[in-house]
Length: 500
Image (tube, rainbow, N blue to C red; front, side, top):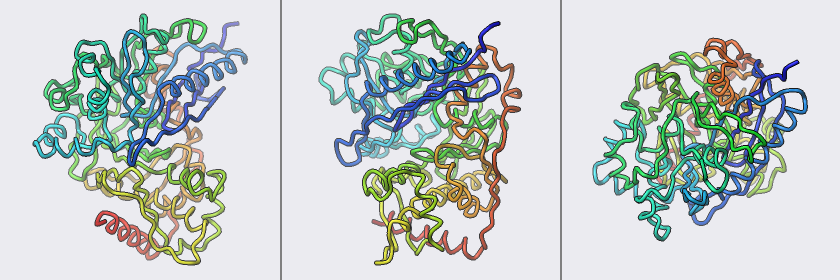
């Protein structure tokens, strides 16, 4: 009797590393997760220790693999998905990072972005990458590291340093250990498309952009399809050589896990941040509403595109309640707290802790709470932290509609959607059906599907799509007058924040 073939997916996120093992039916057979510290060196700065990213990723992969194979299965391939835009630069010879990872939320390069705008680069960035000029993306982060670590820029120009998003760093470590011997310096097209250095029309690094952002080409990884050969793990890492066969940034992986393969398909993921992706077909669609144009996936050399709206703070607002305000001990408490009130008491949270993303793109904005009275307590704040996620999603959906995509349903995933109250409120505010899948952690699932496609566990996207199953549908039930009043309150809060 042969071992059951399984796929190991590593989902390296902003606050934790998770490994999930899936079978050919898309069912999880083992899982492991570890959180790691967030580092805040200054106002608007967010960093991670790359060694903590590696250590937690390796630990959860080994734990999930051990559990799965003890049950009679055998890992035949690995899929990787990751927090996008987060930037790491390391020494090619030693494999050691030269600086902490600068996280996607980090705003330190806002002055550099402003300088590039003043110099007239924004139109070219928009046209070639589909992105806006914002500290969110990797290019200015790379340049900052090279300019602030002694000798780094010269070393990078000589090819002694490697830049990568988290997927590249993990692939390097997985394929060559910490010494870097035999390591592969690779990324996939979805992660490359989030750097501000990759031309999504020609599907290559862009020399003009490299010059504008002052990033040497010698430090860049090679770019592959999402289901492709990313090398094999060094036997010292997981005990034997296992092919790394699928890679995608977390939001694209989530769309794949939600079977978003057709034009018009739309999903929204609620993790640390919130990200809405709308599939737009085989040609990039330029947004007139401050959304991003991005690559959804590339398979067998064929590229699919999407419009994306990025919200920097979703689940992070609940983490703020837990870790900074200490008014809850666990995120699950927010459901009961929100239900304990008949309404929101006029309290609105604008969670601009790291600026505002789409459609506002205001890195200088800061968080605010409006409508506080003496009677407002932790229940009002908890409810506001959940409600603000729905309001921000509405802002994105309105922008997507302005670009010509009008969905009748929204597929949701991520840790926050386990909260029934939040998902129902989302349906009420959006005034459309919200569908929650059986598998809510679709990010890791998408990475597993990609790896499975490469190694032949899944024959086609149609076969993958047939595995998607709905767990619940939430229908809008709010009176239109109440909905309008709530939205008006939110828009007033946003206006005040932007005028601050």
